[in-house]
Image: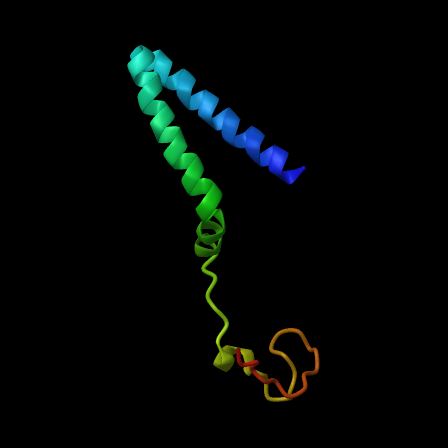
Length: 90
C-alpha cells in the first residue's frame, strides 16, 4: 500500500509541474517541467532517508556514544539499567 501511495504522490507532483509548465510555456514549458519533475522525483525517492535524517540532525552512533552512561549506571535520560556494552565486529 505504501508503494501505491508513493507512486500516486510522485505522479500527482509530476502532473502539477506539467500543468504549471503548460501554463507558462506551452509544450516547451511542459518538456522543461517534465525534466525537472523527473529530477525531483528521482532525488526525493532515492535520497529521502538522507534528507530527513539531515533535517533532524541525526548522526551515526559511535562506540563512545553507545557506552555513555550516567553516574549511577543507567542509560542517560531513561532510567533503564544497562549491562556491559560491546561492539560487534564485522
